[in-house]
Image 1 (cartoon, protein in one colour):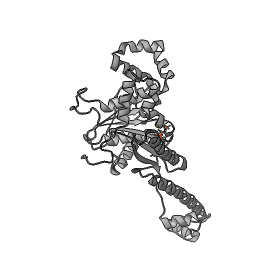
Image 2 (cartoon, rainbow, N blue to C red):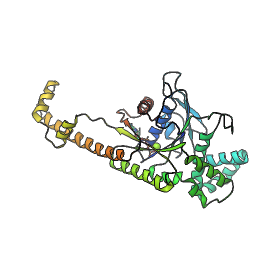
Image 3 (cartoon, rainbow, N blue to C red):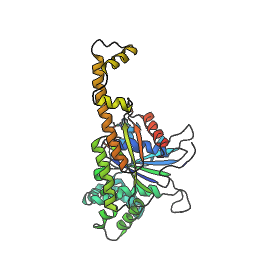
Image 4 (cartoon, rainbow, N blue to C red):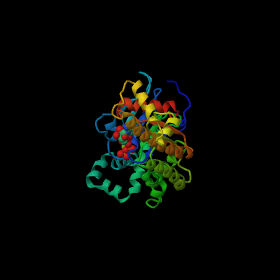
Length: 341
Ligand SMILES: Nc1ncnc2c1ncn2[C@@H]1O[C@H](COP(=O)(O)OP(=O)(O)OP(=O)(O)O)[C@@H](O)[C@H]1O
Ligand SMILES: [Mg+2]
C-alpha cells in the first residue's frame, strides 16, 4: 500500500466520540488499523477503564503501558504496528509526577497513602487533564526526546474518548483547570495539553448510526464543540456505523412503503425462485418489505441530516456476524477506500 492523500493528513491525534453504543471502540480500533497501513506505528488509547480494546482484540487486560496489539492494515510485511494503552487518572498522575519530579518511586507510596485518589476525586478537571495529557504526550513524543528534527514515535494516536455527552468538558482543558491552578507546574502542563488539543494536529470524529438519537447527539456534539471553544478544537469526520444495505431499488422501495407492491407479481417471483406461494407467503413478504422500506426511509432521512452538517462522512457496513478481528480489518479497509486514512 503506497502512501497517498487522505482527508486527515495533518492530523496526528484522532479523538473518537459519539453516543454510547454506536461503535466508538470498534471504529477507533479500525481507524488505528487503517492509519497503521504502510508500515506506520499507531497508538490506540482507551480512557474509560473498561478494557474494551483488550476484549475487542481478544487480548489480556491492558496494563498502564504501551503494548503491541495488532498489525496494521496491509499485505504481509506492509502493515505497521498498532500499540494499545489503557489510561486511567491514577496511572496518569503517577506518570506525570515521574516525568516532572522524578517521583516514580514515591508513586507507590502516594498510592498507598491515598494521595492519588485524593487528587483525582477532589478535582475531576485535573483527572481529565492528566488523561488527555498522556494522549498529547504520546502524540508529541519524538524518537530522540525533545529533538525537533527527530521523527515522531507514533505516526498517529487514536483515542477512544468519552461519549458525546461528556466530550466538550473532557476536551475543554484550560477552562477546567483555570479555577484550580492559576500558576505552577499543573498550569503549565494543562496549557501544553490544551495547545495540542487546539492545534490542527487534533480532530474530533463523531460516530453515529442512522438512527434518530445518535444523529441528534452528533449534531449537538458538533454544535457544542463550536460554541465551547469557538472552533478552536477542530471537528473531524462523521463515521456512520452499522449501515444496512438497501435491498430494493427506489421505485420498489416507494411502492413497498406505501403498501402498493403487486402481490401477484411477488407470488410469480417466488415461484420463479422455486418457492411455492401456498400459504400466503407473498403477502407476508409484502409486509416484510414494507418494514424494510420504512426502515430505509428513516435511514435516508437520518443520512440527509448528517449530510447537512457538512463534515466528511464515511459509511461503515453492519457486519452480519458481529465484530471480530477480521471485521475490524474489513471496517479499516472501508475507511481507507473512502479516504479517512
Ligand atoms: N459495524 C458493525 N457491525 C456490527 N456490529 C457492530 C459494528 N460496530 C459495532 N458493533 C457492535 O456494537 C456494539 C457496540 O460497539 P462498541 O462497543 O464499539 O460501541 P461503543 O460506542 O464503544 O460503546 P460504549 O458506549 O459502551 O463504549 C458491540 O457489540 C459491537 O460489536
Ligand atoms: Mg466503547
